Length: 92
Image (cartoon, rainbow, N blue to C red; front, side, top):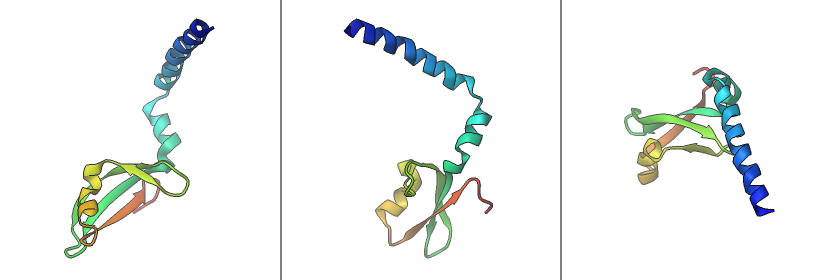
């Protein structure tokens, strides 16, 4: 029985990869665009941009995942910086 489960898994995984590859980047972007965000960290004292990057929504309550280097200034000195997020499907 264990061998049968393993065989089914080994067959299903390549099929999943094929279906993901078959989708074009454009169709994936259209599908997930509402979950993508532009993230800008701003120095409060000067109003200048400290860093920027992208992120994506990972929960319905607004949690956004991004790379550490995008938000590191804010995380290290939150009193000095603020974070501004804009959905990519919104006009700035």
